[in-house]
Image (cartoon, rainbow, N blue to C red):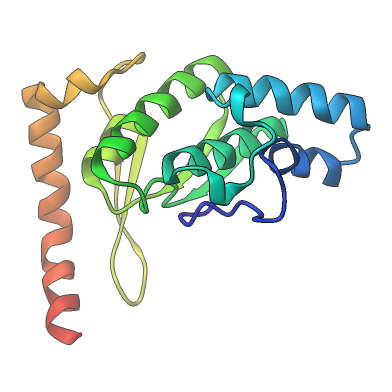
Length: 179
């Protein structure tokens, strides 16, 4: 799943969500049933015949999320999936991802530059340096699941956020100065 929606503009919501299933060789009726189930789960049942240009940015991201989960893959790769969204939509999508993860329990490898998002959604945070990219820290997130957005008020959350920012700050400054 990509940060810029990654949906096909010439396909409807239904066709976009069914695309991975088609690539995996699923039959037409199975594709449609699975795609409709996932479209419903992300709250877009009334929009299955719409094209991406008829949807908001958050709705397009929901299509991409539904397509990723619909394939049935045990592992999902997400590259800044919420990066292009406004703050309010991003928060709603984080809640949606938490709900879907709780239901599906898939392994998700997610790249994000948002520290709070990493803590809220992740079980492990791998901190990487800038050029050359190397792992500088591997942090276990200490908060039990299920998690909600209210966790951001927990003093331990704030402490972890500051700890991670401390690991990143010098690299961010060096990158800005070199730009």
